[in-house]
Length: 268
Image 1 (cartoon, helix red, strand yellow):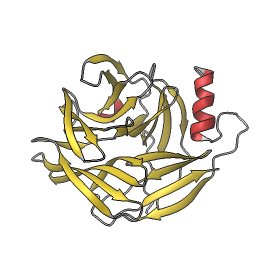
Image 2 (image 1 turned 60 degrees about the vertical axis):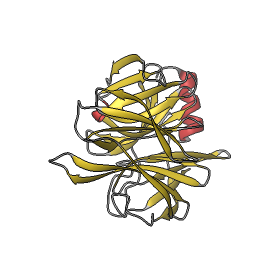
Image 3 (image 1 turned 90 degrees about the horizontal axis):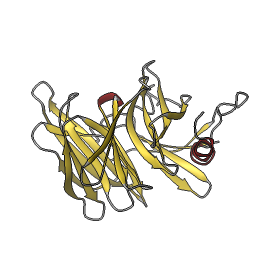
């Protein structure tokens, strides 16, 4: 396992789960709360929690064959009440992806709903919900993470076949092919290290969380023993948010479309 110090930091502090040692016991996921959003969430894509507010990116497909839809960005409270909303995109670029917060702005990619297409990368001010176009990319960008340690933006294309890294104004630093082809990352969050924690689906039809090194994009650790919803939907199928409360971490999942619950977990 590469970069032992980073691995210990991320696994012990951030994931707080076993599977690092051969004799480790599986993690125990404790469901703390279920919150039903009081609005149509459509097909959720990215989620962040800032204070007592959630911010959600979502796609509403109107005519898939015709490439018609609406990119939504919602703000809602701890009880699931919709507070504000705005729309994102342009023409056939209406598919928002996984999102991340850099401490000031929320970064949101909005792409055409097909691989090898085009994307707009937005910065959204959570105080005003004003979206500003940062730059454009000639590829479908499905998720982004802001690397706070070096001040760059990392993006993943359709099924995370490749990683991109840009400056905040869009200058391409590098493009790296993803050598871990079993994971399709859905929503990722920055971790000190630097690394990122990603939710997603796997080639074996199971879901999971993956800790990915932001220096070389290698997989540091993955966790596959995650509960499913009451409808047997993968918990990591759609967006995920992460919050540290003291020495405990909380995980937020919104796996089901339209009227599904927001699941809140802690790990023992």
